[in-house]
Length: 291
Image (cartoon, rainbow, N blue to C red; front, side):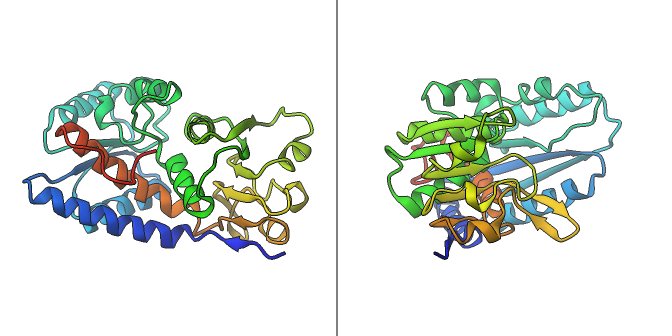
């Protein structure tokens, strides 16, 4: 068996095209979605990521507002900026690039963003709304994974899903989204007993552990769909959390690294900004961009 590659890069390009069309429609009503990104410090990876976000935001016709602050910026100064962005009608989405400097209280910063503009989906109210099945802003990476799964599999109802990883950014919201689609979900982690055996029962396997090639080919159920969220920098370049050579011989389909889940994250950030814009203006949610 040779697994099908799920091309996240191509799907993300199509998604951005759909978003651009809907942004153009909003422009006809005098509305321009605006995304504000706040970056503290000089971390090279974060700088590259923020530049990419700004470029893609502008490409789909949205307004991009970038705020670059020194590493030593005080928490109060950051909170004051967030409040200004909360109050700015031209800004519909606010993202503070993580991780923050060590002197910052990450939870306090995230929860200072008004939930309606929290396009990362990390605010405690959005977390709670997602967990209780209410309308919420959904974290971008899990949303992208869900879109890829729906596109490849159609209905997820009744399928056994295993999510390896229990982070607030990926693992937990991914499990909630799979539950919403009526999958039977198990969250696994570093203390899970006999993890390989558990994985072998999964029709859908989502790996989000941050360990290079952690999931081996013989952990995978023949024909399973494998979503590799990992982006690990090694001497051999970027690799995922899944041993792709082994997975390709067993899985029915899997996302590559790079070119799988990664491109979906920024595309879903734009999707969330469009959704936030519609909700702020009392319009229906954009088609196909929410769970």
